[in-house]
Length: 417
Image 1: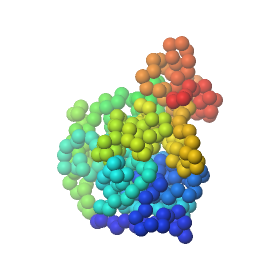
Image 2: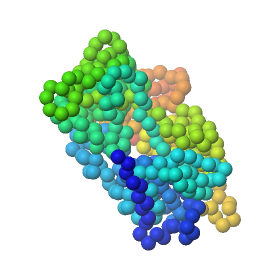
Image 3: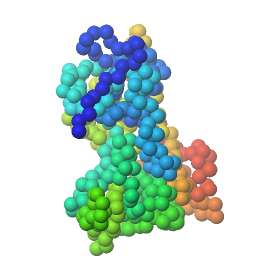
Image 4: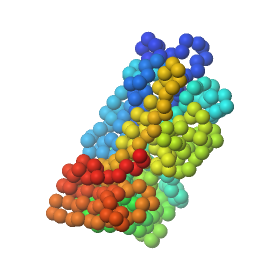
């Protein structure tokens, strides 16, 4: 079913250009945390520029991190939606188009194609987020797997959970563990499957990974690690509507059965639109410290952006980047003398939502030379990633020691300074 796009204009239409075919001062593609945070920061500095936001969904504002602990809080998708598109349009004094498809960027003409029509911009921001990595799995049930990367998928997830007792989660990383904790907390038997030797292998030293595994096991989480799913096949119905569940064949010869399969294999920056427009692409859309891409007047922010080689799909990097980019998008002074703002990233610890074993992670910058030093006590763990000279480059706090987040955070070097 195709849903018709709606154009939301702010009350009084005070932020709109007067001509029939306006050239918008700023167009933002994406209304996730990055797009809406940037819009708020821009309006703090500039209330006059015409602002257009384009959303591929209903354009409601919600906190994406809440998706992986919404079950325990008994939050529906509607509960998580803090404001609808009209409220956001009014608050931001911006035009918002929802359920819209941006199919092309013409950088030479400074225009984008939206739902088949062209819109012109002075500055364009790509806040297109990230896409779930699709695993190469065979079988007649492979396409039935679900991922939860936005509010609509969360609503579908809750719907499909009804009557299901056992859930298989593909991916023992941060998102997989958070969802497993959430599912187990409401009584769902949860099985985590993945090639890693322990959960959060890329973020934790082995000792802490073992403790996290034990903490989640205490909730009833089951594990199949050091392996991966090769086939997913539907099981025969045992009565009623729908499938009788799924049989997951693993590469080690084992079989897992579940009523629902959740894919949490990780995310990759959505660079499809940027690639079509000829922007430089690495892991993400490559931008400098002003958030400017390789093409004039086109910027990128959030999970789709690679800032000076760093792709940081977390909340705090978005907050820092949004302030910087807002300053660079705001209307310059009359004489045009406005120095470009440069983003800086301090050390930014991340709280992992696994109440069964509380964690705070501050990953060291990529490719740094160092090793883990682990201090375990009855109250928890402090793991420090130290350089050969003994400098703190990153850390993990677990259990009661998560209370030391602020103190440890002050000791971290900047990721980008």
